[in-house]
Image 1: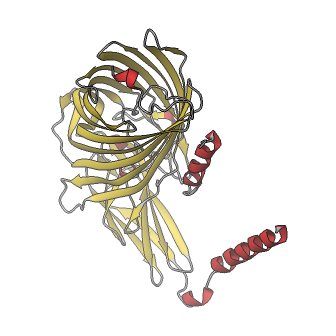
Image 2 (image 1 turned 60 degrees about the vertical axis):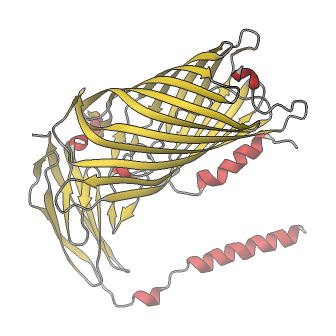
Image 3 (image 1 turned 90 degrees about the horizontal axis):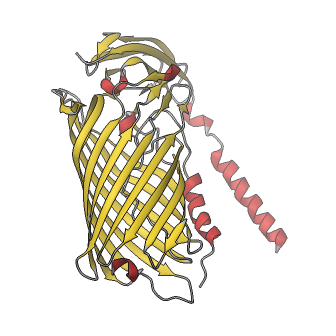
Length: 323
Length: 117
C-alpha cells in the first residue's frame, strides 16, 4: 500500500476550508506543544499523534516578581491531531489541527460570571529536511519551515456578547515559523537542541488592528533510555516574545516577556508501532513586560501510532534511536 | 455517465439556492430599529476598573449584540459591564448592534484605559 503525499494534503484541505476566518482580535491559538518528535521520519512512514494538554494560570507577574493583583484565573484543555509523513528519508511533512475543549476565565470581580470559549484552533504545517543525517556518527541536523493558519473560531459569542481575545480558540493571525533541530545520540542517551522563531502577520479588520510579538524559543534536551522501551527526557526551554502592537503601531506595554520552562518527559514504547509520552511544563523563571498573567503549570499526553508504507523495510520504530 | 454527473451537480446547486432562499413572511411587521444612544458611566478608566455601558434603542423584538476590540464584557442585553486589563490600555472601542429580524442599527463608544493604579 502506498501513501502519496498529495493524499495527506487532501486530508487537510477540508479542515482548512471548513471554517471561515473572521479576524477580529487576538487569542493565543494553539499552544507550543514541544513539537512531538522533532527529528524527521523515514520515507513512506506515517505518524498519527493525538495530543492533549491541560494548562493552568492563576498568578499575575510584573517583571520577574508576583504582582499584587488577581482579577482572574485561566485554564484550558486543548487537544490536537498531529500527522507526519516521510516524503523521503530526509524530508518529511508535519501537520497539526488543534481544538480547545474549553478555554475558561474565572473572574475575581463581584458580579462577573465565568467565561468559556471552545472550538477549532489553528492548523499548522511544517516541512522538515534532514540536512545532516549521519547514521554512523548518530548526528542529525534538521531545519524546518512552517506556517500556522487561523482556520478556527475567532468570533465566538456567548449570549450575544463576543468573548475576549484571550478566550477565542484561534489566534486569528497567519504565522510563519522556522527552526533547526540538532541531535547527537550516544549509546544510552542523546543530547539535542532546537532553535525556533515565529513571525505573526498583522491582523487588520474593520474594528481591530493587532500584531502579536515575534516568538523565539531555544530548547535543550537530554534523553536517557532506562530500558529498551522506557525513555526519559529532560528539556529546558527558553521562550522570548516581543511586545505586541495595536493600531498606529502602538506598543502594547503589557505583552511579551521571557519564560524558562523545565519539561520532564517520560515515554514508553507500547508496541513496535505505538508509543506514549507524558510531559510536565514547570516554569522556572518568568519575566513579564508590564503586568501579565503567567502560566503556573501544564501537563500533556501524546500517543504516537506509526504506519510503514515502505515495502522494503518493516521496522516501524527507529530502534537505533533507543539503543 | 458525464451527463449524469452534470445533472447531479445541477440538482445539488438548485437545492442550495432553494435552501438559502429567505423566508420573508416570518418577520412581517417587526419594523424599524433605532439605536438612539450608547453611553458609559466612565469614559476614562484605569486597567481592571469596571464601568457600565447602556444602550437606548427603539424597536420591537430587539436583540443586543456587544463587541469590544480590546477588553472584556460581562452581562448581556441593553446594559453591560466593561473592563480592560493591563493587556488593553489605550483607546478601546465598544460596539453595540441592535437588531430584529428585519433591521439593525449600531453605534460605537470609545473608552480610554490608563495603566493599572
